[in-house]
Image (tube, rainbow, N blue to C red; front, side):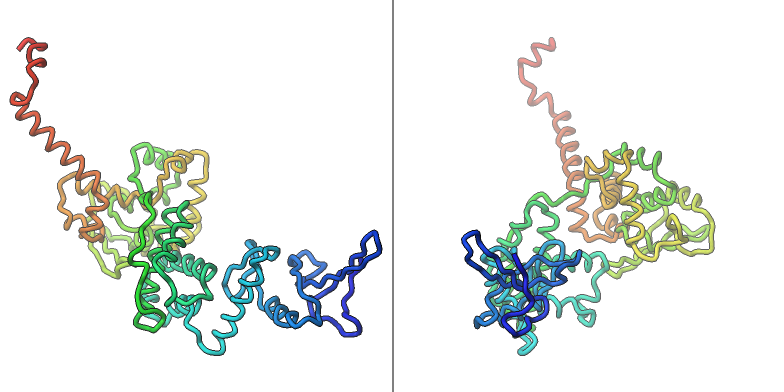
Length: 403
């Protein structure tokens, strides 16, 4: 087998090379390939091309030159392509390249341009979102571009949207976040000419997406025994206040004698004033003194500049052998917010009172407190049954008990 970098007397374009294969019978076959970074550790897989003199050679070379590649395979302007050896590769690649060219020439309103326009920081509907919401929506936006980036939002049907959602069904939380973003994206696109309706409104959620269970007692015991104090303290703040992770990290240290702590929610942009429980005050008083006004310090700094620093520390903690029960039972930090809601409801707080402390709507309090409501109803039902037992007790029970 021999390779040549020229076709006749004409030099081949960059990254294009030819392979000549001779059979045992003496016949010769010449193959043409596009291989970026050939003969290096970063070499791409070779993509078969037509012969240089064929009319399809130049268009397909242009497609190859527009390609990118990651660990999953080839991508063209964000659009995920089939395996390069699959017969569906070239039709998908040529369609994506056509949309790429048209987008630059005509300002085409396809899904890629819709996602990019929505996620532009100059768009107030995007810039006003919390950092955690943006992070999740960016992941969903990337998936949309990979799946249907070169297609038009106006062509999307409810069936199409449901198929994309169902394909993510193995991870319900991801599927439903994808659905939420796609719906929000389409709704935003309607008055801006990308589409005329939002077909995602009529799709169904993937069941089984309530992973946040409240922490059981054994979880607190493991945390207090094996976690460093600064991580214990952050968990206690979430437990006593019911705030979201990012809002807990942003808490300002209350001064001596202050009986409330102010929290500005990143998600709602609202400020809530939370009375400090006496047991929580004991935790606050144990925080080491330093020059920072922030309540929570990291392992190596006086405060967390971003939530990512905390998440890295927390994830390392959860990966330790002592916290294997957390992983097995899906005990996560956000579950502490559910603990706070349940505790407040259990002691008799109204939904509005719980919402005022936890910065949560009454509907969300109801959602978090379903188990409390069911237990309360069950207790009330059993009290009624106890009070009127004499009216319904079977005669056989009375005879058996000697009544």
